[in-house]
Length: 162
Length: 204
Image (cartoon, rainbow over all chains, first blue to last red; front, side):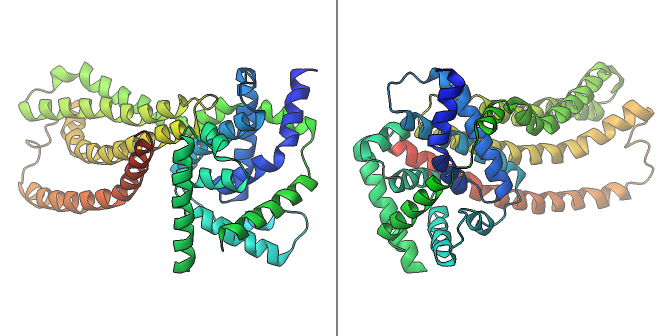
């Protein structure tokens, strides 16, 4: 099996995950497309260094999240941010007004978190166990637990405020 | 919205995205061939052009330093040259730091820590750059007047009134300007600092 074939299969299997990461870390569709492309490029560049010591999805989350952070840094220097509404509306092919409204609320909550919490929240929503979150983030599993409790508390406070 | 509800919305979204796969092999291969470096270079271009200009003017001053024949033009020349050599280093250092982040092997925490430190450094650099730029605005005037027109800015001006008016005005402007710069950057620096502290706290 050629390297290209294997790689395209990995990307295809995980295209939804990459899409969700790009939505969380950008707030307009142009930046989102750019980030998507950049994540795929960085994954390709790093593909040879993947030794198979961890699950491919763990490695992929790590590279994608790292790319998103460094990308964010460059984007912030340029300024000009647009609201997330536009992206949310294009999220799925089947437009369901109620679902999109709920999705918008979900993103608004996530946007209120800091970068560390944002990454933790994403992995939690993706259904990752604390151990895997720990491998991706570089925190200890107990620390992941403590941080996630804080995120939950912060979200509750946000809800009360709203 | 409770966490359980968030998880439900997220899993609904995941399900929908799973059904509507859009990428083709060709699209993926094209994305891998995108020249990332050139894109980063586009960001670095203005900084690089600025560096060439700063260094060019700085070298021009140094080559002609013997023509600055009195203490104030000489002092202005030295200060200008220092500022012109230091300013580009401040911005290029933060771009270089950005390039050296190891995306492939770093954990999220490590990248975030480097990002926060880089951000803080960049913001501090920008702040310092404004102050240096302000100083340069004044020191460069007697130097260029001397080197380009062979005139002494102070001796060539017959009346002292332009200076009497200009100096208090410049000081007032500088105070207002400094306050603005400080206010503008302090929030960003503080948020980067609190993220650094939070990340370092996880190591304890």
